[in-house]
Amino acid sequence: MKAAVNTRYGGPDAVEVRDVPRPVAGPRDVLVRVIASTVSRTDREALRAHPFFARVFTGLLRPRRTILGMDFAGEVEAVGAQVTSFKPGDRVFGLTPGGYGGHAEFLVMPEAGAIAAMPEGLPFAEAVVCEGAHYADTYLRAFGLRPGHTILIYGSSGAIGAAAVQLAKSYGATVTAVTDTRHLALATSLGADRVVDYTAEDFTNLGPQFDFVLDAVGKAGYLRCRPLLKPGGTFSAADLGPWGQNIYALLWHEATRSKKVIFPIPKSTKEFVETMRVHLEKGHFRAVIDRRYPLEQIQDAYRYVETGQKTGIVVIDVASLPDLT
Image (cartoon, rainbow, N blue to C red; front, side, top):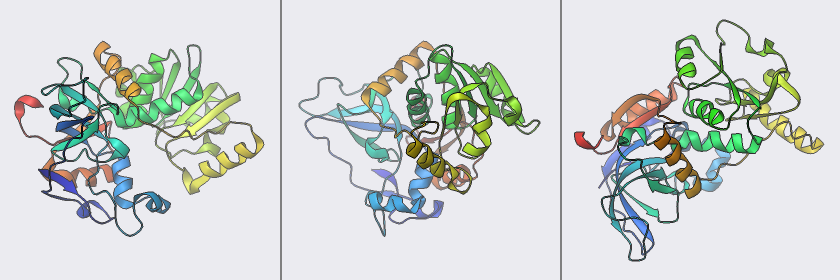
């Protein structure tokens, strides 16, 4: 089978599309023929082993696992003898085990893993939305977000931010989205109650009116966002922030037990993917697709993601069959 393989750490040039052995499903596994995947910020950081201490888990000198790709959508090719939830031909989507394996023509998923049936009629390219939503939902659940709460989401046009706006509205919160001029209409279309253009005004002057602030791109940082929080409000971010300040803020607030800064650890589960299936089915969540690339051009996809300017998701069309996209 064809797969995008990286046998070394580095930039986009470290990825090569080559032939590799097709995986074999065990008795409780599902073999998925992958139609679509994504190149995400998570993939980019795994490719470069950023931050460096990640190599403790991924391999010190070279990657232990060489096929990246968190999101997948495709068709069930075969099932193990003990599988009862899926059958060949089923359309499925979800998150790969440990975030590896989606950039290949075939993928083995545990039946009990983060895999679910796709909503009927949904195109495969519009089903690879779980990576950003997975992070966003982790933050929102850790906040304890519910109706009546106010939340500010900084960076609402990326995969995490766009997902966070939609999911926060599904929780019943009042959402203020902060983005740049070209994405104002997008944030409004996703359901934001208020949209702020950070290129035209200083969003930190909004004052302490928010129960929660989520820096969905990790560029604003806790120190800048702190004035936005109500007494007892909570901040979280999708990255370390300028000069790693979010980590220092986390350690300080953990030591003082104030819980004003949290960094929940995302964990992909079948329950989460099933929840996303319902959101997609009911029209409460939609994919925001920036660009699409065939698997053979995955290096170009990585180069684009590395610009930090993507809107929503960058889709990889692993299969080139026009009737399946």
